[in-house]
Length: 223
Image (cartoon, rainbow, N blue to C red; front, side, top):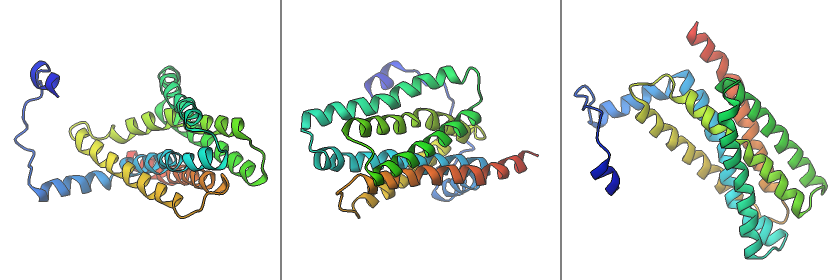
């Protein structure tokens, strides 16, 4: 905060055409929300990304309760799984040199759905032990490193003059979907991995369906 206040100069001049009254602000959010490219990619990312919140809410019950690891081991597990998200985010920069945002987003979501379905099937059939469970969560969360930045780029692309407002609305949707999905974890008594894995698989499938339904609307708007 101090660095921004004293050392970062403001280069954007105030825009007198932007009103700070509640009515125009609400109207601006509504106009953004009804844009096909915004609601397709924003809801795709928000619903799919809520799987991360489900993991955060359910992983203590899985690793500390179901597998019975100690607190130190859980810390290492959490760090290993989180590193997949971080590494894939860096790899995304390299991938984008050859492929478009849209292609990478589609590929990442499809892969994430497949991982989620395999994970759910294996959880129901008892395929996975502790180490393979960590590996599956690692692969699942790694997909977010490709989904999130590319979906965000597609969300903000139509709004060069109101990117801040679009970003704020996207963040609100993302947090709301994450909160709703993580609340679902509390409905179940975690005696196996299946409830948590089922929810995260469901969020990925739903995100892919939203993308599949919304993409034709975006193409129709462009043509």
